[in-house]
Amino acid sequence: MLLKIRQIMAILALSLWVSSVQGGIEVRHFDNPEQEVLYDQLMYELRCLVCQNENLAASNAPLAKDLRDEVYLMITEQNLGEIEIKKFLVDRYTDFVLYRPPLKKTTWLLWFGPFIMLFLGGVLAFFFIRSNRSKGKKIDEEENDITQNDRDKIKSLLEGNK
Amino acid sequence: MKKKRELTKGQVLFRVAPLVLFLGLGFLLFKGLSIDPRYIPSPFIGKPAADFTLPRLYDEQAKVSTADFKGKVWLLNVWASWCISCRAEHELINQLVANYPIDVVGLNYKDHGVEEYRGKAKAWLARYGNPYKVIAVDTKGRVGIDYGVTGVPETFVIDKKGIIRHRFSGAIRKQQLVEILLPLVKKLRLEP
Image (tube, rainbow over all chains, first blue to last red):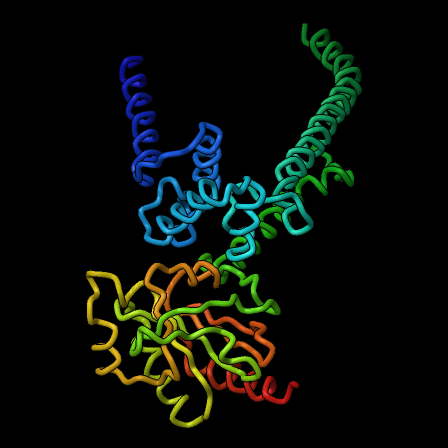
């Protein structure tokens, strides 16, 4: 069983690895390692506009290839940095092209929504636990009242029977 | 005897909360059904159309550039012979030009000049008609990138000052032509 799980994990890991190298296959030459790091990072962070659920690195779409070429030229020939390249693409394709959307008014909910949900869940859990606890206490009290009377009755009944 | 206990405020809230959450989520998901995930908002509306100077399809020595259309309201229609939905739209553009005087500039996108489509663009126009005032050839799709083209066809409405005022992503439908495009062009022609 353990082995099976391990095998499945290995297959999953391999499949992830395959999908991340499959697309952007062009061989690129860079003047320095910084450029290469920037290129790899951008390929990973920029979204393919045609397939939408792939980044530029993974996509086989012709537009993705054009954009890879474009980014490559911007890095090697125009010597542009990350911010300038992202601006170039956002100017043309909006924030949609970024897999990591910037923090601004319209993306506020996207960034903080999960934390708000977590907070609401916590509040709900707190009240749930508290109300259950006080409910439990009340029931105990009520039952105690009853048993106090009943106990006498039971006692007298039992004694009377004897 | 079992007494019916009064519910406290908190308990009522707690029983109603899942229903409210469910309805809220249901509403959001329902709204999501009508949102087109392929719709990418255009950042170009109100911005100057990117300048280009490209060879013409029928006279490659001559150029066509955005500057040629300053002072006119014109349409830039991105098309390609390999694009299936362009065919449906093309008939509509033929009708538009036949009935209404307007300059439609074709942007032949990654088609003419690409080896595998050799001769296709001209054959396509010979077959389906040529409504274009002039056709710019964008073999590499570089101008397409400047216009944020993600799929063909796309159509831009550009005003007298060279500002993009509207963008149709995908084939224009007759209803859009009548209800959006024509009124907009008429309005823009009245602007200085």
